[in-house]
Image (cartoon, rainbow, N blue to C red; front, side, top):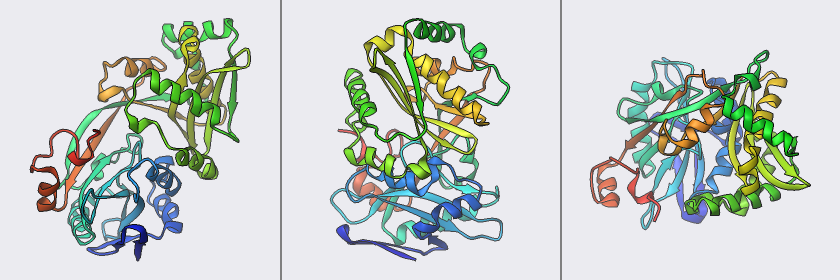
Length: 352
C-alpha cells in the first residue's frame, strides 16, 4: 500500500513488515484488534490532523505476526525545513492496539524499519488509559509515566448524585436553585454557540495558542458526527448560554472532550450540574464509564484533577503514559541539536 501527499511530495509506503492500511479499512482493522474507540478511529484522526501543522495526515500501520497482529494509528507531520516526518497520536489518547500481549518485541524493529524507510525521524505516543495499552509499547521506546486520568463509574444502578463529593453535590443543587436550564443534545446541528463560549474561556485562562482550534476542526466534528457521536450538554440562564460540555460517545464509554463557562456559571456551580447531566445521560443508555481525563501537567494534586476526581471519589485513577521513540538518531540530532529526549518531545514541536 502506498499513499502520497501530493502537496508535500512525500510518499508513505508499506515496508519493514508494517503495512499501511487503506483508510476505508481503518476502523474495521482496529475493531478486529479490540481497540476501536473515538480516539483510535479514522474520523477522529482526520479531525485531529487539522490541529497540527499544514500537511499533517493520518496513517494506520499494521503488523501481522504469528504471535498476534497489532495496529498503530499515527498522525504524520511534515518536518520543519527538510523532507520527512515526525509522528504523533491524535489529540487526546492513542497508541498500539492488539489482542495479544506478545507483540511488542516484534513491533519495535518493524516500526523502526518502516519509519526509517519513510523518513519518519521520531514518534511521540500518548497512550490510552482505558485501553491499558502501555504494555504494548515496544521495549525500544522510552515509556514515561505522565500522571493519571479520572474515570467516573456510571454503571446502571449507581446513585451518581449521592456518590459525588459533598462540594459537588452542593454546587449542583445551587445551579438548580438558581435556575440553570440543562439541555443534552446528542445530535447537535451546530457547535457555534459552544465554540464562542469556549474561545472566551480560553482567553480568560490565557491558554496556549494551540487550543484556539481552527474553523475546519469544528466543522469536521460535525461532518464526522456519525462516527464521533458528539454529545453537547448546555446550561442556560434566562436563555443565555453560560456553560457547556462537549463529549464523544463510543460503546460503553463517554469521553469528556472540551468544556466552557462564563463568570456567572463559575459562581453558581453550572459545570458541576452539567457533568452530572452527562453522567446521567450515559447511565440511562447503559454506558459504564465517563472518562474525565487528568489534571494540568498530569499532577494528581492540581485543582483540575481534584475537581474531576470529586465526581467519583472512591474510583481509582488510571495510569497515563507517554512514549518516545527515535527512529533516526542522526536526523533527530540534526533537528534537536542534541541526543537528549528528556522534556518536551520532539523538541522542535515545543510551543514558541
